[in-house]
Image (tube, rainbow, N blue to C red; front, side, top):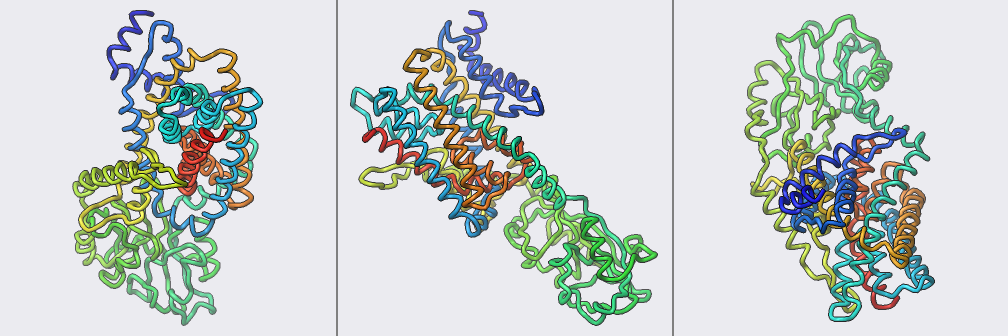
Length: 539
């Protein structure tokens, strides 16, 4: 065993990828339908470091953890930016009130329980930071106590309660998802239905109520969730638009999910005996890749392909999702549009949108600029009640990325990342972060198991579980959150990427989890930094 320790202690990169490999294997193990997923890397690091602790400390450079956290939160912010601002307008106040109430409860419990167990103010502040897994808050406390006899104590309490804080929040989230499994299954099913396979049918217009009305007047996209992509009148095939007036005997093609198509058929008339999609001599379909950067962030309505090319967008594929287009849908780099247009206009349309795989590479200049802005923002002191706080590596890049994600692009700088690139960078960052936290905390955890340490651990676990539970309850009551949004919001209260990753998996990889996380994260981060400093001074 000593040989293994010496090898891993000497070869830091080998240690890093050993922990990642073991953690990914651990995360795949399933017990009663539950898996740790990527959080397994955290516990692999904790276990390996604690196991080899009698031979010496195993450590990964703090820059590894910081780099991982930076990549993770920046990519989360970019993907959440558009949804964040829309969600804030609809339920932001209620979600953030729930967050504030949960944090206040956690601080009160830590203070009262710490006093009952005879802990000093530095221990109380440290266990609060660890129980709610917030390293910037610990840094603020350490700075506040710098030069005093209590300076090193918060970090020790934090080291004990941080792993328990992660594990407690993970288990509570999984327990909540299991308790509300029927409701969660319903939400997931509704999301799946909205992402159901998109098909097309040819329909003969026979309903007298629609005759003489234009497609725009009938609002078929809003009412039924379908797109009318083709029209045959007599022997002439054409591409309709919102001004096209329907006549008796017209045959149209409607595109949507099976359920929406069925509703549209009942509205327009009956299923036609022919399929217009098979007639390709005058009107045809093509899949076109959006690779020109000047279109990123524009809506389909602003692109106005109907006027420019007499074309209809019938589907938009983003990552693994097929979406029914609407005029309000914003384009992202790498989106694939399925367009129907006159045959002679298809080539021109493809060139207009770019349709080039080589042009959708990551804009590394924009990525570097965005990360630099986030890191600078992380260091900006924010005056608060006579003191100053900073957002730290977790908060600054997230705030910057939320703004850049909403903008999409600025001039020639393309802030948005292609879907696959965003997902890959996000998961690489999470692996680095979890490995760094696990390895560096495992040895300290093994060395602090005495009576006082157990008291700190127990109080921290209570703070973690009750604060997260209260956040889940209040976000549903005050914020109107469903199970998926509540899981994401509770992860935001914890400001913890591991619990966010678990919530993302529990929600069947719903992006709503990330939006809810980002919605409460800024308040949670600032609130914990402030509360921790107050505990260090007043508890």
